[in-house]
Length: 365
Image (cartoon, rainbow, N blue to C red; front, side, top):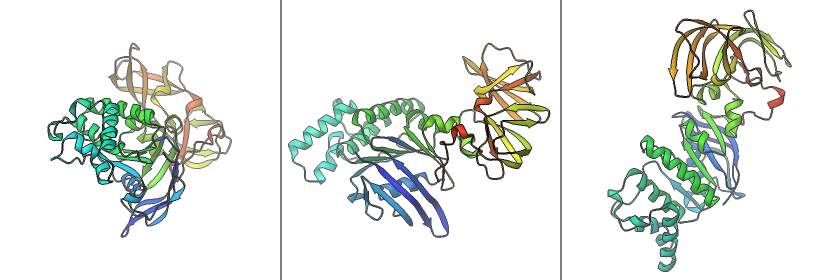
């Protein structure tokens, strides 16, 4: 397989810029996620990496070779689309074998390779079936088989599970990650589903409006979002934002919200004016002595936990607490925030004012 590196990649469609100077590296053997909302530039980035779109500027390297201006056919990669793109007049065996036949491979080698791929994917029993009668999950396995059979340097997948229902999607995501681990493949995968990205990915690039907002491992992106967009996009429910105003200097280790003095990690840089204090719902605890006070607006039962929504003077807060904790509507509760987990954002720029202990978790854009 191969390392994939892009440097200052940009794509313009007339006056519209779809991707703005993206830079990141996909290491050899990684399962790499391109994540973001519709229209953020993730699919355009993937298509430039694969050679289906030529960049307006910037460079693409695969296995150390600069391929930015080469077509897909010269990059030794395989692409898996959301809508399967199978040949309806061929059976499963012929669909999988087609790339090898088109390369002129000998029949005995083709049969051997197809049989091995079918075994890996668990579709030996359907090799002679027409693809039109298969379920969505099985058709996606066939599409994966056609990509795998070529043994390319890298796999590029554009929301390959997006057309499946929720049950098939969860099962196929587990199978796809297990397949990746067995093969040791380099895989770049586009999705708008943050849960899918967090579950499957070794690394994640989060994009918005053509810009890389953050690049890193899932845990760092969740714990230490680099921007307010990432904090809101990652997590269900997303990170709470308590709005404040004042002067916070570099090295500050507490913040005042009204009369409440809240400890936090020391800031790497300061802010003067509006700021937001970010805290994940699982790091909010209800107590009688909490420095902040909030009125209970709603509760959502989730089995072992519940989500409690409270109104404070600084914005709504959601707390994820044990389901056996009794909470009454409109009661006033104190809120304790885990100081070690707090993030502070400059609301003018949306950027996190990273603490020195976590300076390595920064946006790469």
